[in-house]
Length: 349
Ligand code: ADP
Ligand code: NA
Image 1 (cartoon, helix red, strand yellow):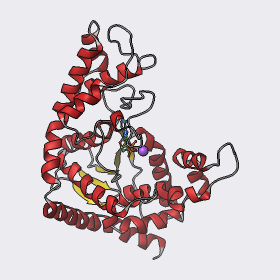
Image 2: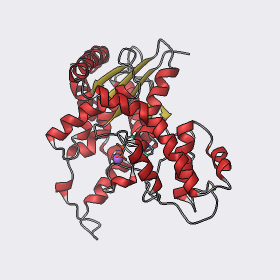
Image 3: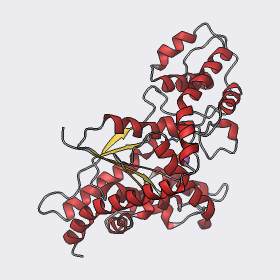
Image 4: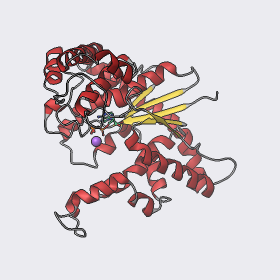
């Protein structure tokens, strides 16, 4: 097959939770493992995206560094893959501006992420009044920045969560608009393909909150018991799983609609062991929730203990982290300069 250029990014939003790990980060490692030698892999911590929401500067700085340590701790090899901070490579913002100028406003208005921001900013009960202090232009145009992240490397494959699929559609649209507007001699950008990063074994696609299994596990929940962090100890994991909301039905069955909490535990167990969730469910048919929870806690501990220990080690190696970031930035800049040089020429700059 022809060589792939894989690009993926993650926001520096503190220590990732189990949902981030199973739904996104662990797939990066799998992709790295299954890549052909001639494939290129780029993994970026997208600090500029984080600025669309208010950030505490000191916390942002720490979160950027921690996310780099996490990426290395889970097994991304900075010699194999280009690992870098987005905000270290100004080619992203230059390309973003150029793409902004060919992006139809209507396409951005149709982004569901924008629509939900807009809805959240409406004054209670009012359909028309928008509290503009809750909106900024970055929130509106950040899908274009995402497109620039991908297109700066002429990426061919983009592993992202399902929630990002619409943004990748926009990326393809913008690549196509650019290709048609600035033709010769050959299309500038390949149309990047979506690579699903859903938990392969989870038909539900999402790891759910341990406390409210009708919503996804998320860092935005104020209840810290609702999620397992990559840094949680075995004791934390046990306590959180034991307290997970399930149901009072006898026996264990996989039934995400009427038994979301129980099914979520089965999903986690299946994802941890890379096995099929219905097969896992069959093993617990005649067992109780206590038994299931105990096995889930063990499986999660088994999954996280390696990355957790590596993270605790690497996060204190500030010089190593700074070196990795600097080298990643240099490689990313050089690599994207090939694209930007050609883009500037085509548009007359
Ligand atoms: P959060 O919802 O905690 O804010 P993000 O939106 O920052 O997480 O998502 C980062 C990545 O992790 C995305 O690729 C997203 O699809 C994935 N992800 C987030 N939460 C989950 C979850 N509960 N289950 C599976 N994947 C998830
Ligand atoms: Na989110």
